Amino acid sequence: MSNDRNRIHFIAIFMVVCGFILGVRDALFRELWFDEALTIGEFMYLPTIAAVYRNYVIPNNHIIYTIFLKFWNELYPSGLSLDFYWRLFTVLSAAITVGVIFERWRKRYGIITLALVLFAFSYSLPFEIYSTAVRGYMLSMLWIVLSVEFARSWVQKPDWRAGAGYFIFCLLAVGTISSNLLALAGIVIFFFPYFGFKKVFKWKFIYLAAAPLAATALFYLPLSQKIAGILRTREGWGSGLDVIRVVYSSFAIAFLPLIIVAAAGGIIYLSRVKNRKFLWTLLILLVPLPVVFLRSPAPFPRVFITLWPLWILLLCAGLRHFMASCRVWNKQLIMAGFLLAASIGWGMFCHNYRGFLAKAFHGEQHLDDFFNPYYMAPEYKPWSLIQKIKKVAGENEIPVYLSFNAEPYVIMLYGRMAGINPDRWIFDKPNPRAKVLSLAPGTWILIKTIELKRGELENIKKRFGIKTEPLFQNGVYSAFQIVNQVQQLKR
Image 1: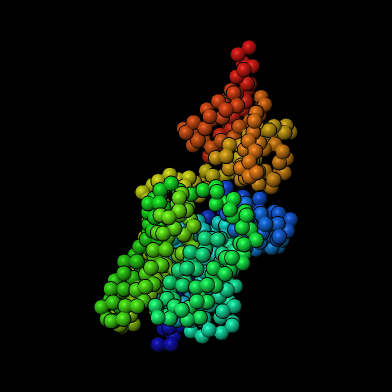
Image 2: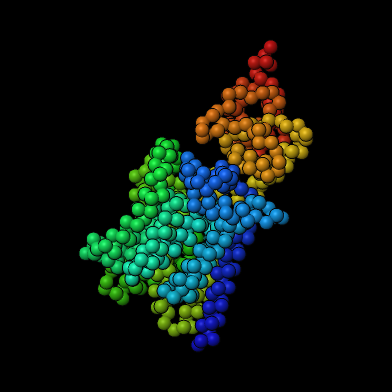
């Protein structure tokens, strides 16, 4: 039996590693998109850590992540592509997150359960996107998982080590993304059944609930004026129902075969026990609802991706009860094999039909956070565009106007990497706000080809009073050249 368990342990690790490799292998080599280029060019390249912290003018600056990435960038070995190297930091964060979950939760939920859940997680479409993103979402998951572990230690034995560890990882979580406070609230909900209503005024529960709030205040109070400015921007989605549909469908699709079985496990558990106090933990699933429907506009769906570690906890609990109902060891292995095959088949379906899933659950591709975002498309190649610009322009430093939808920060960052003079780029700067007033004849205009159908080029021509002619097309981009001003052509 001991040898069998050792083999199961090895196979479980092998499963998780395979899922992880499948999850990151393709997206690891994609090029940067708007938010990632903003992270690098506008925040990471700031001269000091203090400057990174103070430059919280938009929530795109995931401060703690940016600081860690800045240290990572200092270790850059020559010979690697820079964007690939930056992605490696997030992939490393993802690997550590998966490893910590496997090591810390396997004894609690069972090695078979954890292997199945982590395989499905690693092979999911959202994991492919966020485990390779030059953003703070995956690092946030690591802090949240570690916050769960220290919170558990605090609940079991409230000593200074557990309390300090819990506070530190709460601080790192909210310092990475302020909305991670929602996930920390989910941790409080998860451990509420250990206290019940009678003990919520005990100092142990008060600290559990207050530590995330204190950590948020400690980190962001020095930035309060800038946060007030951020709140006035009112960015988000107009429809809360659309946000809810995307948030829940993305999790359900990622784990569909396991969710069905976990639900059955939950029913089996409830039929055997009289104490229903742990049903309170299901409230974690409802955390997005008040935020979405009370805030206008509603938050972007990606805000809620950091709740996944807590939702995975619930999934593990239900799956564990189902596997326990297969009392014979051999039956558990047969069921595990069936669920693994189902997860592989479902994962392959999702990857092959990601465009269909995106259209069915997300709608517009440029707002897709979970299934098939535009920057995952093979034709999204801003580096190739930069090379094309250099080739066509030759030695001439022709000014290029970048529409906002053309992602100026991406073009500027890749242009910087290619040695192009940054003064060549012209665009409307959002912060501080500075609009371009006029464009000279001979200037190039760069827009995304898809925006032609939405009339963006015509709007630019009307705004500046110009006429253009096509120059070239490269990937998702189209370039035009101003041939003259309308007023001059009328003379």
